[in-house]
Length: 239
Image (cartoon, rainbow, N blue to C red; front, side, top):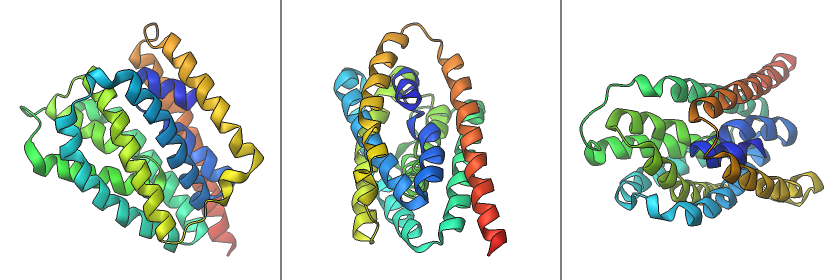
């Protein structure tokens, strides 16, 4: 629910908050797959809500590199050992948090810097989305570097996440990942939680300063990322 609130208020944040926790509870492979599925649902709803603000030109430039990155991340997800993948997921999430926290300090260029910058940002985002469920930070750096406005960014991220998370699910299923975790009773509770979070976010979005929401996001996600790194490292040491 917190992830859905932050997704509505800031444009991203769902995966950064949810991915480490779900991966810790359900395992890194199934957990990230479930996060991808929830991201599709959440972002699809927000795409309809924010469609007038979407920059479809930037979306089209980011997507090809992102889908290529998805393939790389999917192969990594299904081939790595579980403890190694836990450490990887947690570390990528922490890296993403650091990038999100300091991305605004990146030097801004004029315009959107064309296809090379968009392709590189999309590839990094797609690979991180498929392997760790966190594809937003690479796009945040791109946005900071190119002076992309917050309203357009927040709206455009929604159809972008729908496409990238859907591609991540498809690539991982083709590579042999299991989707059985979606049938667990506890994962079914995610649907009403997402709905409640989106409704609450709709109410809070005009009232909560983005800086406050981002601070909450960073703290919660950092704790979750640290927990899964510790869990995975402990399993590795026990082997």
